[in-house]
Every structure is written in structure tokens, then in C-alpha cells.
Image (cartoon, rainbow, N blue to C red):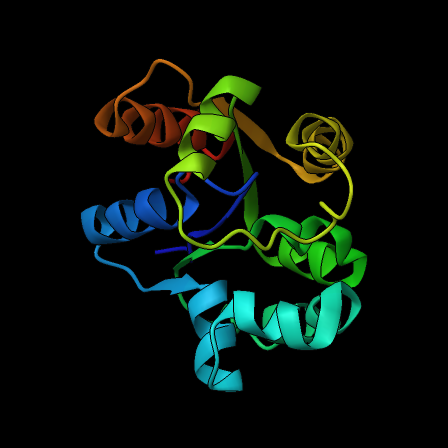
Length: 173
């Protein structure tokens, strides 16, 4: 069977890690959360690293972590939302996997982010979430093979949509 590699991208709070884990469980293939891999390698959480070293240092390490991923067997990868600023990593991921952009509306992202403890978001600086979303949406779409709108869908509906879109995109699944 051909290797099935899927990379989930999108804003923080869209469900990349949650959905990636569920998809990997359904397909019984490995799941990699790049933020967790980063934290294992650095020995600290992403937010603390950003607070101590800044966005640029984080992006450099985030890119290195992404480039260290092996695609020798089927894998589902959930990225951090800022991976889109790492052009070399995005080209590498796109070369080896189907990139799926999980797109959400501003109200949904703001709602989900308000529930999160961590507040460090790369690129936010003095910007609003709305401006950051506008900036990133274009970049996500540029690299995406598929786009799934997650608003108004349950996790199960999103998973079914992911599977259907992947099947249509790659008839070998």
C-alpha cells in the first residue's frame, strides 16, 4: 500500500492536533504533533520558548523540527499555526504529503483562543487576531492541496469531510 502522508495546517484553535490524532487512530497510522515534538526536543513548552527567545528563534527551531520529520511510512502531522512562515519547511512538507488547510472563521478562532491558557501566538505582536488571520489565510491557501471549512461541523463531520476530500484528491486511498 502506498504511504498516506497528511499535514494539517491552520490557525491556532482550529483543531489540527485533535483531528490529526483522531484521523491517525482511524487509519491506525502514526501521528506527529510538531508542537509536542518541539517541546520534547527543547525541554520547554512553546509559549515559554517564545517568551524567552522571541518569534524569530522559535520559527527557526520550528522549521528544523518540521524538516526532521521522516515520511518513510504513512503519517499524519499536525503543525503549529506559525509553520506557514517557514517557507523551506512548507516546501518540504508539501513535497512529501497532502497539505490540508483547516479553515475557520474569525468568531470561531476567537472563541477557541479565549478558552486557551497559552497566549503567545507567533506574529501577533501588536496585531489583532483578525489581522493575523487575514495575513495567514492567504499563506495557508497558497500551500494547501485541500481546504476544509470547519465552522458549524462536529469533529466527526470534519473527519468524514477530510476522508472524503482525500479520497477525491488521491484515488489510491
